[in-house]
Image (cartoon, rainbow, N blue to C red):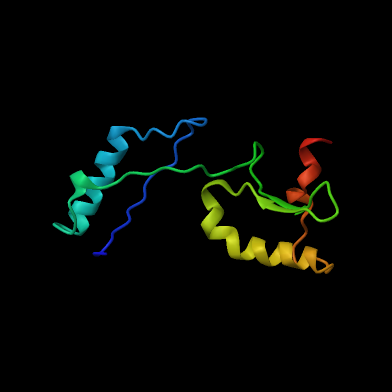
Length: 114
């Protein structure tokens, strides 16, 4: 397997549509080419898109779910990679029966059904 380059780009609020607008792909190609000229055949590059679950009110969902053995840590949106380690530490504290080091009231899973 040869060298690989992964370039990421944008957030699209597009419901469940996985299409990537060509203008977005052009911007990514131009950015990569300007920083790393000739590094890859950008016209032959594979494109991919995924969903970033987010909540309607902004804060992630972190805490005990509606079942005894269900714990939720989701809905970080565009900050998933950024916040994942801290959120994982918090949910581990909850699972271990410890008081979380941060107040989780704003992140409580049941806030949408109240």
